[in-house]
Length: 272
Image (cartoon, rainbow, N blue to C red; front, side, top):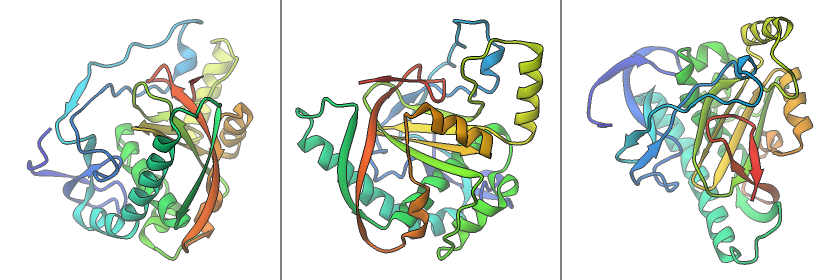
């Protein structure tokens, strides 16, 4: 994919139709500059599949200069990149150095790490990346979630609505995962009743997004019911409280070490 071509479209954050710039997901300096071969499959109606089956992933797409897409206008890309991305890159490098120095020792399911970061800005960069991932739905993040748009465009906005939750985990090798919108349906057989429930929850936006790349994965859950379902899995570490800490702080993180498998299905993991 060439980053020099001219692309006109609606910016995922401000919602305006403008020339779009190439947004690396995650930022280029966060180990996302090498060629990447990825499967990108949007899976929304997982429960409509026969029991014991999974959808086939799409044909792989080659990203010559790291994974990303034309999703943000130049103004939004420059603002979020200049305000949040550097803090995220520093966070990623601290995680990387800590994991690499202990790689031979790590055999547990949860890894404890200490990082010194500005948590609010790291979380806002994570939300920015989800805004770009959300473009695969064909809808516009900033229009569907004006409360999150406000958080991204106001660097001193520190109130995260209770109907949104963000989670993190360590990716234990394997494939990357990018899912724009899906429903967390666990332990239910396909039925007309379930189909009606799916349609209702999709219309209400009670879905999840997930992306995992390199050695970190993140989940964004929307709606109280969906958040409760994700919480009940017990897999992930919630990071909502980061939004209230906009000063350099040392945090002790307990991150689950998970393999995102199958790579095209959200919230499906096998332990390392």
